[in-house]
Length: 160
Image 1 (cartoon, rainbow, N blue to C red):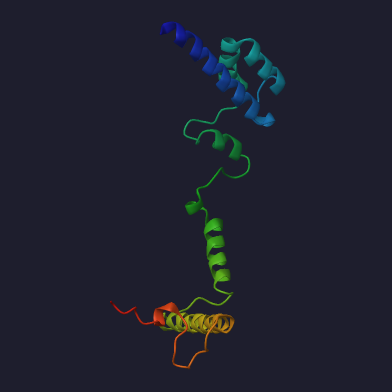
Image 2 (image 1 turned 45 degrees about the vertical axis):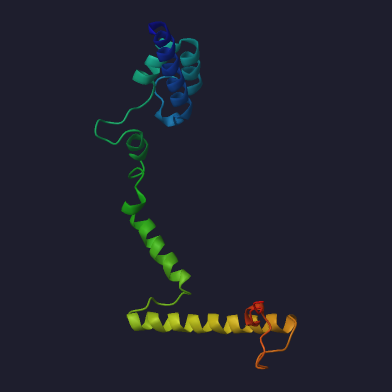
């Protein structure tokens, strides 16, 4: 077990350091250029990885918020969660108004009920129109003749 750990720990350390070196911005690297750091980490896995982690990259100040704080310090802040971002919340409010047909939001519950009733009437009218089209395409007499044209209108078979 100890032999496995002696292989896996340096391997994991060098993989982490190499990926960290490659994904770090050029402006955050200290002392030597990025390609040379990557070569050092690959050629000397333990020494190169430890030296990269200690001296190779600018680190955030303790309590500064990690990697994002070091990168975001120059541009006025780092990443902000959507529920804490006022611009995102404003965009949600704008899109909800667009979905309502660019109309002002209903101020009273009565206004909302009226628009719902209008929508329901439109749906019912559309349903009636579609039913009429289906009746015209189907076989049998039209509406109002008294005899139904569907299987639900036929009487049940007599018992023998």
